[in-house]
Image 1 (cartoon, each protein chain N blue to C red):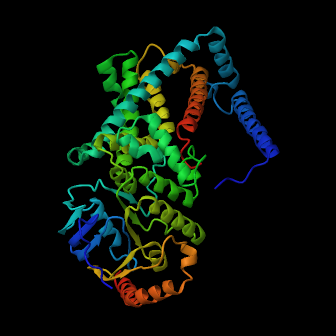
Image 2: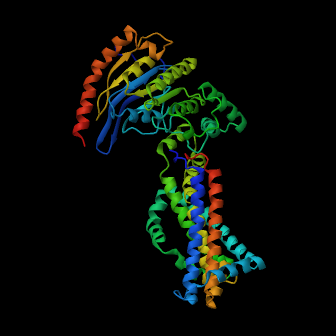
Image 3: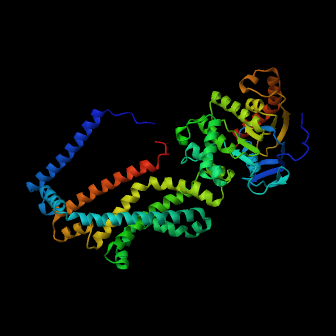
Length: 269
Length: 259
């Protein structure tokens, strides 16, 4: 099931990444290659260092060892090709939804009127037309996620890094958001690294699912190609035979790691 | 979470009782001094207090004094605000500077700052500047500590997100640090306006030729306790009005905060 390295330069390539915090090794010797236009999910037990890996890919965290390449060139500083969607709320509470969506354009020096118009356009696309004047605290959890999505996508990044973006949502809202994400993604096929601990979410969204071992010293233990047809509807695809087979296959390798993580977290204070 | 709605009639009743309570206290004061249970010399007389206040307003004598006190308060507030924001941002963002100045900041915080009043009188004379500077010192400390805290406790997610969206360090300052610190400043707006007022009045009391603090000082010098009370009441009403204005401004500026 292991996929061969892609010819040409991949969108994102992590080679032998190790991250140590004082004497705790969060990630050990991890390599991950994401092809241009590929949707890759990284799953693993809670607290296994998935976010650490994503921060390395974003250039927010320098790895202790290893190197990162973005479209063939080594990454120095922040990854300007990438948009990052955080797990926790990262909207600016003092800006309206519209103000939040347009902030990236402001940073790039896009004139106010044009930035406003494009932001309003994106709000419309994520289904928030007419909510632009509201502040984050006046929006529901799902609406805040949509705003964050528009905030990231308006800059048209080639790589999209997503850290459990929908984990705080209720199941119905979550499936709605997943479908919308797939629809937006299919328009121009960005490379996506999607971190989640929810295996069903990973399978229904991705081209490929990478399973990480339990922490400490997390590393990938297996890699599955998801050959489900697209376009997909995340709630319907979960009922197909192939989905169930894949789920069983991946879960059998993941289960041991989840149990290990559980045992470790019980022993560790 | 919204507070449970209080019915209109209940609010009306409470207001009525509040006014009654005030009248009862005034009546008690009047009776106690008239019957000689409290000495008039030390406690004044409500009738005289109100007569003095009426005189002040009717003759217009009070206005220049109130104007000066207000001017001192506003100057102290704005100068203290700007200085506090600038220094707070600087120390909040510069790790080395904040480490270096840490013991001095602690000392400044611990010191009873009103005691600087006499020094300011010596330095800046009996005009308005010694009062303004005392107020500035008081306001500065409050604003400075809030901004300092605000900068250091900027939500790391918002910071990382802004950096990923392409903000350079100047844009980070303008769109993340400053608004975040501002919300802390606004949360202390009532205290800092109050402190500017305290600085102005204490400064006037320490030595001046105008202002409400000066009126009180004058009255005290001739043992006119009723006029002292009148001054105190005028100051209190004035402070309440000032606080009400702050609330109005706050409501406009902090619309983004969850109610």
